[in-house]
Length: 444
Image (cartoon, rainbow, N blue to C red):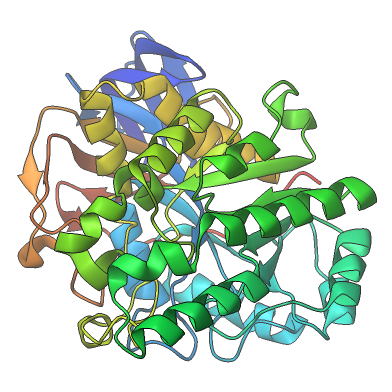
């Protein structure tokens, strides 16, 4: 593997910015110093650019196996790397659902053969696979995923005994999708009674409403407190839910943590009029007040990490009527750009971006030797030009589905280089696929 010398970078890491060179050798950061001179290393001029620890995305749906007409690990991992994401954790609602250790192992084989980014895969829970869940290797698998609300993939876990069993016995982190199914079905029935089949996208946050989210999230928190579970609640979508979480305990000591997603930080229900089903997600994008409170919770540490919930569907699927169009959208290529745009708007600092997209992920999941720009750590690095604008359009979208909810958006920053485990995988629009990403491991 090549060695690299990144010169004159502004390093954004561990709450501060410093000017330094970074020497990469044998997959890891060998040295960080104000001036480094190494013979034989490939030099990357980072003058005027900002070097971040690579974005660790703890929630993606790359659709392989079984749904590869929407996306696949090869295409989406490349899009992620172009977006500055060096590591992803992928969800189990593929076909077949990842509900056995054998099926989980199969996904790791695919990752090893196809993924340009580093990877881990969640073990899925159902109403009847607790024995398989308990076999999960906690040092080599990111966590256990529980759908406490129905979404794409028919993996709803709604049996109270099963949930008690999972929360009481889970050997590692339990990540939950929280929406109360009974509330959703009751509200949906009321809307159908009033509107028949003529439901529209603007009704989505009213059907999958605040009450459904809060009931489920609070139930999960109560279960976790009862059993001492290591709980991580995904994609918080309401301001009310943010107050369920502690912002006093240091993150390394928290047993209950939470995630915010890019779409809930960027869009609101006012955008349904122009974006339609392209911003149909579960949980739903809700009000501007919810969006603002979620951001506040990210900044004051009620919410610990930022992720994407990248979940592509084909253009044809999204162009169906509201009731038929599936929930989810592609985000990994543009998530970092959206955060940098929020930085330009004064909503978040560069140091907070590094913390919430990398450092805090490493702490939450106890990831081994990643998530920071430190000597001895893997060289997972993202180099950014904060003053290079570009507009998202069909020609520069890398997702297999070929569309983005950010189409037409001009961003004022660009990812120029992405290093994955010391390999320069992406440079100014060009990929180097000679070396693939690695399976990450955990200090548990």
